[in-house]
Image (cartoon, rainbow, N blue to C red; front, side, top):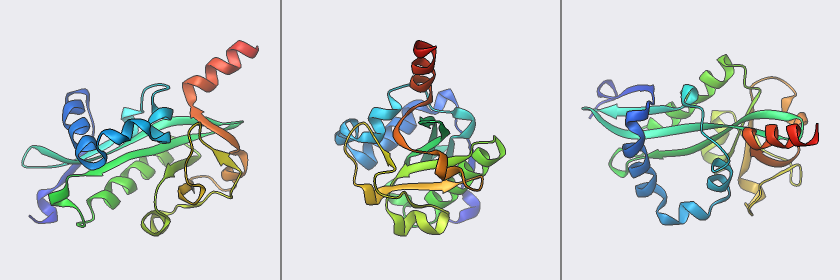
Length: 176
């Protein structure tokens, strides 16, 4: 396989079963207990910012972006990012992340948050969130909570508990 054989595109509804199969393969049934999964249960992901990689008509990787809020701050949660094992270590995941970040920037998203390994995501523009500044509803290793600022100084507006943007809207409406 060479990189010319891989195409990248926005995901669509017909991709759902394959994307779910890749996530199952990558993360197993334990994924349902993870903090990021719990957050994504709050509402839909943003398909306009979510991508797949495919070769020969088969989806081999995907990345999703979910709109989130943390206090007055807004942005997106990147993930899950998953690539089929036979295609790992070929730059596919990094390309999917770059596509998602570029799309989020063009769409006006000010920041992208994720739970992941800083050595992998750091070169892609992510840095650790200062301990105690952000948290998720379920426990997460604070050293794995990362943010990429897409607009300068935006990380300063993110604080508190990260929730799906739909839940933040419901809370605002209830308090109005």
